[in-house]
Every structure is written in C-alpha cells, then in structure tokens.
Amino acid sequence: MSETQERKVTIDKTEYNFDELKQEQQILVEHIENCRRQKANIAFQMDRENVAEGAFAKMLTESFEEKEEVKEEKEKFKGSPKDA
Image (cartoon, rainbow, N blue to C red; front, side, top):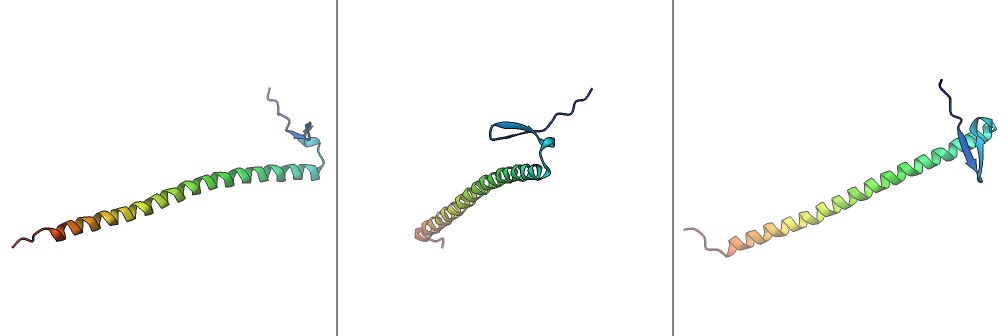
C-alpha cells in the first residue's frame, strides 16, 4: 500500500493542492521555488567565498611576516664577524 502524498502549496495562509492549480499557477510556483533554491545556493557560495577570501588575506599577511623574519635574520648575520 503506497500512498502518493499530495503536493501542497501555501499562498496567503491558504493551502492548495498543487495538482489542482492552473498550469500558469503551477509554473509560477515552480519559478518561486527555483528562485528560493538559487538564493540558498548563492548564499552557500558567498559563505564559501568569504571564508576563502579570509584565508587568502591571512596567507598574504603571513607572507609579509615571513619576509620580515628573513630580513631580520640576514641583518643579524651582517653584524657578526666573518670567519677568516
């Protein structure tokens, strides 16, 4: 006994059976649902890109710190007496 569940849509606080809507109404419901899915996907992508941007910015900042450390190390050796 498998029952197929009716697809319901709520419009202005009134529930409708999707299959009983006019074709134009069904298409509009599909468009709205697709827009919502796309918005959720874009929000996910934005979150991912924000994290990636932060990681790249951190890597850039750290690369300058590493350069400073190397420069400081070189300056230390300049001041020390050379082997004869």
